[in-house]
Length: 450
Image (cartoon, rainbow, N blue to C red; front, side, top):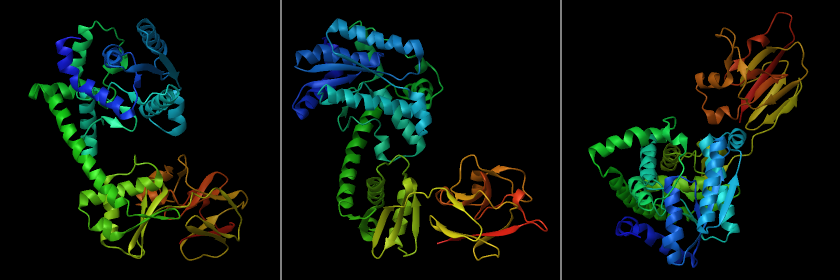
């Protein structure tokens, strides 16, 4: 080790020793792509780490996206590990198949597969920590991405140093410093050619934005890393305080109850965090929950009204029950229902009637020469309707947006179908093909929202 190594990576080394002390063990799993950053991490662990009693296993994941180049990277890491006495684990998966199946972006699917593999590998190898080579430039890019999306102090803290059993000992080390380390130790590495394109937002920041920030201040990334540390510490305090308020919530059959005053009287920033925490506790995810949802919930607690209901992502809703706010899961969406003339039935929060005379509610007269193969379902993404006097066929999604029907309500609407064709939708109308005709077999459909 050179003196430069000691100065540059001292914090990283102390982080690694602290991780070993926390876990009461020394076995660590390093995620190694074969790129410069992860090879620096692997080299540090296999050299300095060994001298300090740490043991490392290298884990490489092939996302199935880059063909022969991906196979080359896997072989490179495997061969390096074999030459340096480091255990090596290889995983792989079909990223595009998962993205299509679960409606994820390719990046989201790749990350999901990769971390699932790392967690399995760590468990099988009895490793206390999963280490990744994310560094200060990566964290700066994350800070900027979150800033332009709109975020709080948690997002502005960049990539967290620790998350459960995942640690990033290089978070405050710059990409340039790692390049110096690799050069000093003659470390080989492979290049992912996709990093050199500007297709992704992160690459645009890396190649165009960060260079400009460095022109303004050569230590821009180091200063952002320091700011991230401050924001992370402040965020931890706010999270702890919101946790104490959230702990006052009581369980309910499909959610939780909390006194309205606990959220309404808290400082707005703290109340919003607590609202997000409670929503996440009920639905198990926070990805699509935003500051706008939290603020809407706070408004509900500040002016409670017994009939007010707030619809939220993940099938959640919030409503007032006495002096409490109830956050609960709504019943699952109803399935397809076959219907017949003269019937009356419930469909989710709606009652639907098919009668020979008009009803009260959203009532539409239909020309249905054949009254067979009638059903009621939720909307489908490929649904299109041509409204009488309209401008041709339009998607039901667009028609709902034009009618001012928000997505949360659109997703509950009953759609009457003749065969597969959307025939009538409350608040939208009927398809022109089914408009009444003289002498035709008219039938009235009525939708009543409970």
